Image (cartoon, rainbow, N blue to C red; front, side):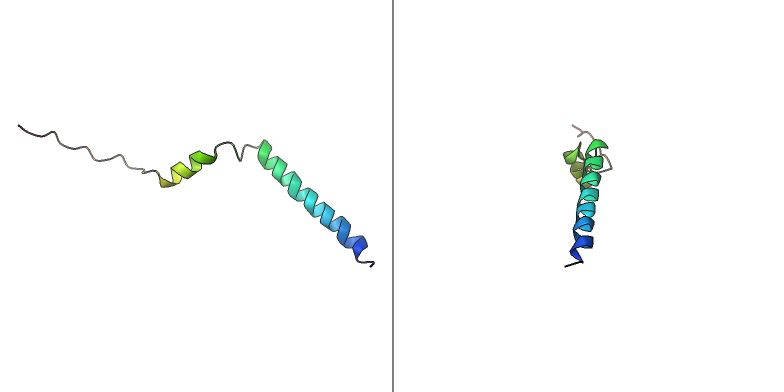
Length: 56
């Protein structure tokens, strides 16, 4: 039972640290543009090749 004196405050401190890290990430803008990163991952870097105009 004496171990609870150590484990309960330790669990509360770790939970508080996780909550503080989450709030820090919110303030620093980590979740501002969720769709942009997904589209940048699949976007082509090279422009498409230009087609030559058809001769008549």
